[in-house]
Image (cartoon, rainbow, N blue to C red; front, top):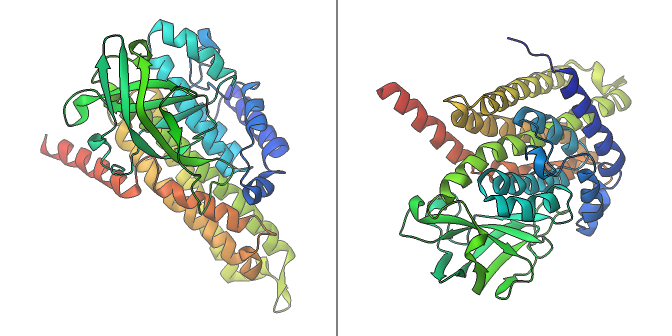
Length: 382
């Protein structure tokens, strides 16, 4: 059992930390306030190989693993949680086309996605199907060599700006086996977007409904075979859950550092805050829970890289634990700042708003408990 990172992983981590410190952290507050989508800065990440982290090298990807990705998103989110999360979504799209698409699709899309000549959005959730993703209603009806799409997708990051949309559609009957995956290019007739959602956090990326109204796409834009889409989505969510957990972990790490700095500078009752035992104990608990969450995340990523039988369970466990603890640590850091933590002059209130959604997306934490408990019961009954 070796808990040490390799030299390559340490170099990857340091590279991501530098990009985060130089490009994300100085601008995060302004992007949040202005609700600005920093596409120019996001595209700079592609120069470092961060647009196709676990996409294969023959189409421009970096060919790295899920633990490497966790290290990257942990580092990026310390600078800007919201922007790091969008880069994660783009990576899921690149990976899905690379992993399951035809050679023609891989060659058409992946080089442009890994260079971020194109940016991508992932479309699974609908106004009437969130946690119950298998009940999605958006239909793709085959007419000769084309599909005609009708329906809507909700809460889509990058909607209206992204160049390509990876869309889960119903090509067959009810249930997961009737779901397929297709690609829809921006500008396709029948593709439109709703108004930008007014959100609590994640303000550095646009979010809107994506509408399909007699939207015609070639059959060649289907990823894999008909009926395979739901399995692609579930496999994608294993990695997505690790990435979003890593974003919580990195944000919580930055929040703990801010709390330590503040407790060292702020004085009350004739002492610095970090000389008060109550605060010392609080900081000790925050640091302990942070490290426990980190170990859980890294172990789950290792299991996914090594395709262990219990990888999906551990990805769900890590997502639940790390996003819950991440939120708690950020909230505690805000509390240590007192009234100042509530002000936009300090980063804590933005961090809190940004990490809150991590307990909802990529499968709510209640659904994570369903996944874990089902797996436990299956194992017990066997």
